[in-house]
Length: 421
Image (cartoon, rainbow, N blue to C red; front, side, top):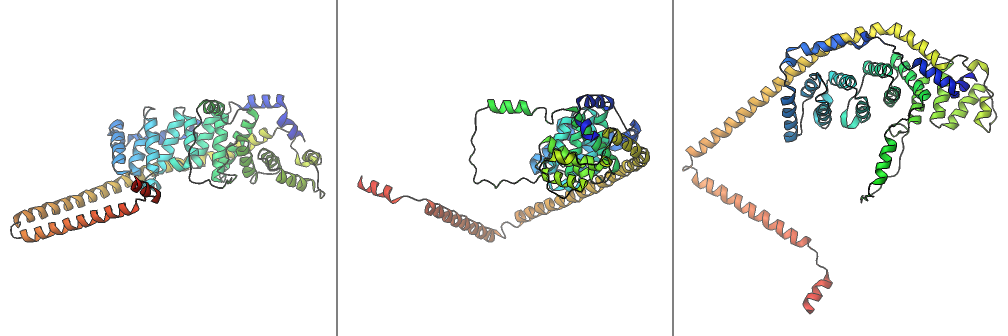
């Protein structure tokens, strides 16, 4: 029972939060900054003019509604400051609307996330990560560890918890560092008493001040709530995250976090079932509080639950940090080669396309010259072709006007009134 007492004891909350609010578990070595920054030494990035490249890509998209994933990757990775963050977001969104979105390079995701975190745009980053349909930025395990560690280091507890909840929506806590950092972030957020959405009240007031606008819709969909991607309430998101993580936690902390998660997610029937399982009690209990009293001490943690999680997390970091760094550094080197290969492939395709267009244009020019050279020899055939096309156009125009007249409906009453007048 000590666990439940400590969770809701205000003095304990304050002491625990102050103890861990500045905790940074992973060293700067984990960020692999040296290897990551090596990409800028490539000859490709030395020649790029960011401003002109943006206008070229933007104009090309406006004309063709197409973008190439390699171009966008180069533009995002070429950023050295925060001057073009808006343009980076815009091009990533436009790429998502094209057929080439499936070819987005892994470095695009990493560069985007690193860039927005580096320049303290974490609120925008979380908004974009939550809008998977329009942006398609998907963090891998390394990016999740990177973000969680950075946000916890800067005491951005709420945003760290949001990253954990985004990973819950992806239903993947197979990486132990992601799992325990997410658990730690959620627990700290619950102790902090921070609101989940800071601007929600301001937006609500602004909406109330605006004039009511009514929009006519053709039909209404039947209401549906999937209890996953439709979740917006912070307590529910945190609760479901704890439930998902708890399934792979060791005993007894898995039980504590599952109970906490079910409570936050308002799954009272499931909570009662779990408590009944713990107490091995077969009769129906009327109240959950009565059930809690029946839990035997062996299922309770006498120490701080957050302290236990911290100990496990530090042990996981000790066991896996070096391997994670080694794997990621190799990936960054491999991705440099991958980008160069994709760029060569893209340039070859452009070259082939340009050559085909040149051949097509040359054939048209030759055909035009041939028509001019043999005009008088083929004059009768040309006149016949023109007459045939003219007749087709007249016939098409006549049929169209006739159809439009038939579609005009004149009520009988109106006709009678006109006649009587």
